[in-house]
Length: 360
Ligand SMILES: Cc1cc2nc3c(=O)[nH]c(=O)nc-3n(C[C@H](O)[C@H](O)[C@H](O)COP(=O)(O)OP(=O)(O)OC[C@H]3O[C@@H](n4cnc5c(N)ncnc54)[C@H](O)[C@@H]3O)c2cc1C
Image (cartoon, rainbow, N blue to C red; front, side, top):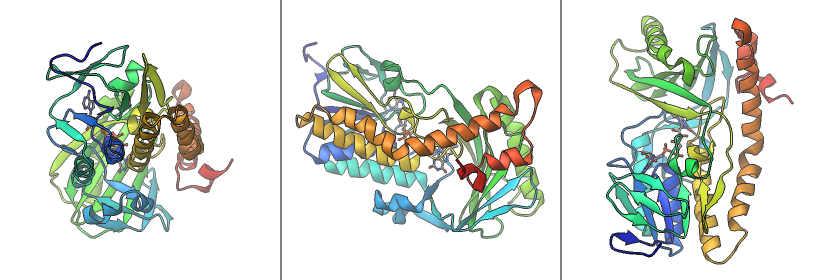
């Protein structure tokens, strides 16, 4: 296709400005390439659809995380069927202001020179690698990086679709007493997911996730968890905000493909990099976005193996952990077959807090 009126031909198009997209855009723009990033939302990070916990190691990739931290987390408490909890000491992390975190990363991409366009979506990705935007423009990039989340259009264009998803519902509530742990609630009622209370200073994120097929149960399940926590005096009686969203839990997709002569890479949720057991995906989005940006730079610089190298690198970094999580998740789900339910032991064994989870 010729570059005509209203058409543009940047080196790189990044779809989505979540953590993965902002990192990819920043790295490619920083190397001097022309980057256009398209984001459906009017502003990066809003509305927040996240429980906002990140592991301490994210500081390596995002030193600025300190400035958006609302409180530190020291340990994890795992309640199985609401019994007294098992403690995982030294489970350290940060509770962040996710909107500020995403905004900070998007601002870094813009500072590096990426042309970040908000409030418009990618509506079509053609077989020749051209991209149609909701404002009518056609983009004709040399490289496409798909960072457009669990229901990635870029992924669909190269045949990579997150099939297994958990749906979630979360409330932000007043926290009565300060708390330094992430609380996890395992129950056979939370099929394919779990409940959580993550403290964030004077408030907490309280939520539930279950397999997409049972999403209609989320509202009553969350109401029940909220009532239970409220009755125990840990949280207030009124919620400030409700959110939710899908989490890919089917493990890694193939993160590279081709549309005509245009190489395509997927990063973050679009590449299925969320942990199938915990649902955590912020750190892997940041890391994979950075790597995808680097691979784009290398490929544009003439390294023809850079894109294949990206897929390999993701396998090296995330493969073993995601495969283990997928196995554990399937073991728990298998207990529901024939109308059964996992007992407390099966639920615990399927959670990262138990030593059995880490066994071969
Ligand atoms: C309720 C909930 C709680 C969670 N809690 C945690 C947690 O505590 N810790 C953790 O590590 N992870 C958590 N996660 C997962 C985490 O939020 C994701 O893994 C992370 O956001 C992935 O980043 P990303 O950049 O890949 O995708 P996203 O953050 O989803 O960003 C994708 C972006 O692409 C945009 N987009 C999509 N389609 C288009 C299009 N066609 N055109 C233009 N733009 C488009 C979207 O608007 C969005 O901004 C949670 C998820 C949910 C739903």
